[in-house]
Every structure is written in structure tokens, then in C-alpha cells.
Length: 607
Image (cartoon, rainbow, N blue to C red; front, side, top):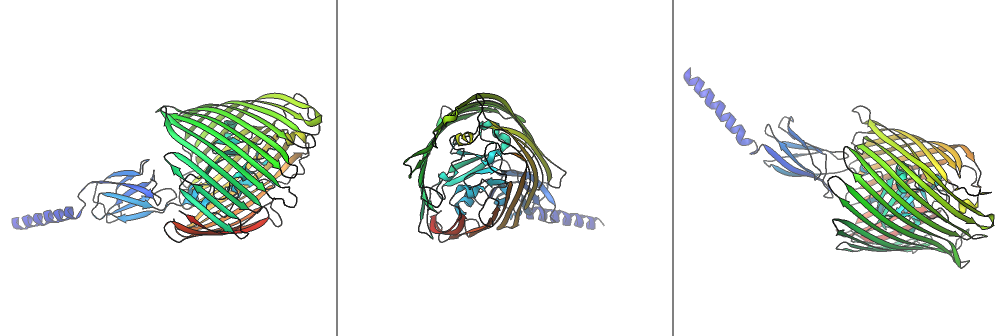
């Protein structure tokens, strides 16, 4: 009996020793998670599994994508899950330090076209790229865009840090970019309009030129070239581009410098842009130019971040038929912002802008406007689920000489509030979002001239009030959807009310195939045709964008859009293909219809 017990104990000891020999030699597993471009993935869930798929350790990646898992049993497999990523599982094979590369679903990560999208899409005008963003609507004529057609149909363009306002005509400078010249896009909704003073009620569209060491060249079906060069060296970024699409020759040059200075970061940039419009039916030959200057300085500590910016812009249009300037606008801006990051982050800021304008009609129109704004805002939570509140106090003044009809001269002090927030509804991925905001807009000279009888000593401002709500689904997987409802009330220079409904769907059909779609419909409820702006047309736009993208390999885009302002049926189909030849060279071809003209292109691009 004693021998049997001793023998059994010996077998048990031998089995345990064998099991320990087969287990990993460490009880700590460390590593990092990155996407296919090498960018660290933060907040990813990492689980260590044993042979029966039971969890034996778990952790989340830090901001730099690293993790450390303390194991309480031998691990055989590692599983990584993150938002908008394909789940990755790999064997450990006796290692205690691993690097996991995950495939991210870029279509779900961002509502705006990414740099990879912008380099592949078939559009020569940046306004066409912007209309792929959910609820961004082109204005009649297709030269401007706006968030849900708000703010008079024109959004504010921030070009390389410079807010561009054409005080003479009220239009933006979107068409000043040559083909393939813009690298990045960011959009700030109308709820943060108080940060920018007037003209931001239709959203803020920030554009940055390409500063990578890249070049692009193409030749379309009509023999019109496109070229973009972006060298970069030791913090000095230079860029030059030109394109000729549909009779519009666009040229632009940028020079930027970024360097450490006095404990902070100083960046300065200057740009010169020009367009030459060939004479077309209904349009005279003309040349448009824009000169931009921006200087910014930022510092940061553990408790505060400060930002100071100075911007200047000059925009003009020269009519080749009349041989004189039709209009000219200048813009100066200075702003300061102080932020205190905390569970409830607080920021204060001050902004001052000065504008002058000249417009040539039957009689010359001249004017100047100023806006001095101070604001306070607070935010809490995360970008997905949280709340924000802002309040701006704006003092707007305007002096206009409107030909022989006299002058308008007035000032107005107004509060501009903003509220917003989103919260989850249970663990299923449903969420509710709501917001309210107000914005001011001073009419341009041409708009004021259309007013039948401008009242004296009154600044003819327009005040936009927006209320919105949305119900959405976003579980961080392969599908994201949202339905929105909003109402806008415009008072002052213009008078109208409109209500709109919209919806969006983003679906990663397969790891390499994505579909992005959105629709928007709004109709005026009341309209006062006081200033000759014509009958209301409402807002209607639909966009369907399908993409096959295999990393740096093959890529195909197919885009179907329908807009109430578009000619004929309003339905437009565009597409492109990107075919790599070598590691550094790819063939780029596609077709798009812009300004009622179908054009084709074919080119070689370095990568």
C-alpha cells in the first residue's frame, strides 16, 4: 500500500513538472499594437488565452500602443480587439514580447476623406471632396459648401490657419486649390461658431496643403496637365501645384516654417494662389488671386495650454473684359486662447477681426466691418460621450457705402450661446445626441446692395439659430449609422425657417470593401423674400461612396451623388482606380463631372 502511494505521488510530481516545462517561462506578457501604417493603437483590449480559450490575463493598450499582462496561468494565444479594427488572434510560441499589427477600418474612423482618400479621389476641386462628408451640402453654383446648408449656404474656410472671408461678395476661396494639393481636412460644426466670430454658422472647414515629399502628375482627356510638388527639409515646408480642369487654370505656392521657440512652438506660413477662368458661355474671362499669411505660437504645461494666432488675407477678382478689378477684400484676424485640461476642461478666448471690401457694379460699393468676440467654454467626458457648453459675446460693427443709396452704419452687441452633448443608451451601441447653437453673420457688400431700402444707422446682421438631435448606432465594429433632425431659424438681414431630416450609414462590408452613404432633405417652412434672393429651393442631397482599398496596393472608388442644385437629372457618377507599378510609382486614372463638364485623367504618381 505504501509503495502504491509513493508511486502515485511520484507520477503526479512528474506530470506537474512536464506541464511547467511546456508553459511559457514568464508570467508577464508585454508588447505593442499598431496599425498597418505603424501608428500606435491606444485603448485596444488585449486578452491572453489558454488552450481551452479561457482568459488568463487582460490589459488595455496605453497612448503609445503598449501593454503589459500579468498571467495567472500559461497562455497559448493572444487576442486583440479595438474600435473599427479587425479582431486579430495569434499564437504566442514561447515568446513574452510581441508586436501585433491590426487592420483598421478607415472608413469608420473618420467622417472626412483621409489623406489617402484625397490622393486617390477623381476630383480637381476641393469642394467636390468636401461634399462626400456627411451632411455637407454644396451651394447653388457648386462653389461653396455648408454644414446642412446652414448659415446662408456658405461655410467658413480656414486655409492653412487663415479664416478666409470675402467681404465683397460673401463667397469662399475653396476653388483656389489645384488638383491633389490638399492633404488634410477637418470640420468644426456650427455649434463652435463662437470661436470664429461671424460667418461660421454654416460650419468651419479647415484645409491644409500637402507637405510630404511627394509629387503628382496627370494628363486628362482634354490634354490639361496637373502637377504637385511638396519638398520638405528640416522643418521648412514648400509646395507648388497647378492644374487645368474645364477651362480653369489654378496655381498655388506655399512656404511654411515650424520651430521650437521660447519654450513653445512657432509656426509661420505664407501662400499665394491664383486662378484663370477662360471665357465660357455666360461667364467672362477673369483672374482671381488670394494671398495668405499666418503666424501661430503655442505653449503647453501640465495645467495650461496657450495659443496665439495672427492671420491676414487678400482676395481679388480681375475681369479681363473690363480690364479692372471687379472686387477686392482684405481680412485681418488676431486671437488668443487659454485651455485648462481637467475632468471638466475649461477654455477662454478672445478674437478680433477687421474686414474691408470693394465691389464694382453700376456704382462702386465700399465697406468695412469689425468683430470683437470673447468666449468661454467647458467640456467633459470623451469625444464619443460627453457634454460641452460655450458662450460668446460679440461686438459687431459695420460701415458700408452703397453707391448712391447712402450709407449704413451701426454696431450690435450680442450673446452667442452653444450647447451640445451625447450619451449612450444601454450597452448595445445606441446613443442620443443633441445640440443648440446661435451664430451671427454680417452680409457682404453685394448682399447689402440688393436690399431695397437699407435703414440708416443699423448694422444689417443675420442671426442663425440651430436646434438639432440625432439617434445613432456605433458599437465600434463594422457598422455605424445615424438619423438626424434639425431646425434653423434665420432672423435679421434674411428671414426664413427650415426643418430637415437626414441619415448616414457606414459599413465595412469586408476587410477591403467599404460603403459610405448619407442623405439629407430640408424644406423651408417660412420665407421672406425681402432682399431679392429669389424663391426658396430647399435642400436635397444624396451620396453613395464605395471603396476597395488594399493598403498601398490596388484601390477603386465608385461615387454616386444626387443634388438638387446639379444640372439635368442631378445624378452624377464618378470613379477612379489606383494601380501600383513599383514600390514608388503607381498609375492613377479616373473620371468626374464638375461644373457640368465630364473630364478624364491619367497619370503617374510617386509614393
